[in-house]
Image 1 (tube, rainbow, N blue to C red):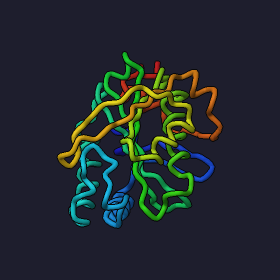
Image 2 (cartoon, rainbow, N blue to C red):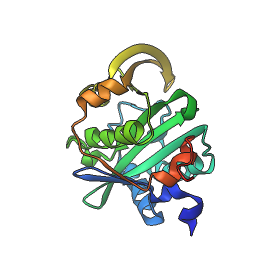
Image 3 (spheres, rainbow, N blue to C red):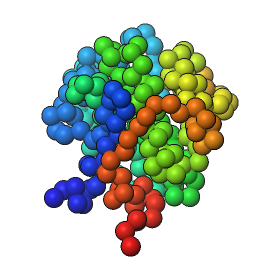
Image 4 (cartoon, rainbow, N blue to C red):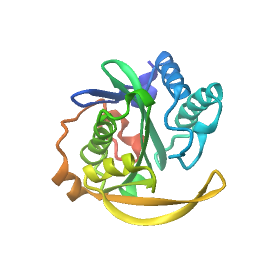
Amino acid sequence: MLIDHWPVLGLRLRTPRLELRLPRDGELAALAALAAEGVHEPGRMPFMVPWTDLPPAERARAVVQHHWRRLGTWSPDDWALNLTVFADGQVVGLQTLAARNFGVLRQVSTGSWLGAAHQGRGIGTEMRAAVLHLAFAGLGADEAVSAAFADNAASSAVSRKHGYRPDGVEHVVVRGRRVTSHRFRLPRADWEARRTTPVTIDGLAPCLPLFGLPDPQP
């Protein structure tokens, strides 16, 4: 079976309202369609790469290509786990957990988006809780980092809820303009002090070598 060769297909994260996992083909199509419907107001750009500026059909195609690309280029020293987020069985967004040289650095980064119709319900906070639990409790991370543009109050609020500390600013170019990005850092001790959302993880053990960690099998 394919899962024998790619065990990440069997990885599942569950919270009281959500399930996060890799999508099947039809679910990937639903995720692409959700992106085509809209992720944010046209007047602002919350992403470093302005992929949501694409026309709807191209935006949907970019979601599919990005999913395949990250799986195809995955290595234990450079990986990005793009988990589709489900609420009541419905595709609502994407939550990413990524790292480079994780086996040595023990640091992860996060990124996410929600379909416009699903925002403002606390889903973003809950799906971040899920991948932070995977990072710290499942993979043994020491810290997590994130970033948000100065005008992205919602993303910054999610980071603060989980105990991230401000970690400086940097200036980047987006849509040809200078934009200020606020960095955030979450040490393990701060995560342990603030975690409240129950999370269960299924199917992790056979995936550990793909994350740059020792194989649990003797």
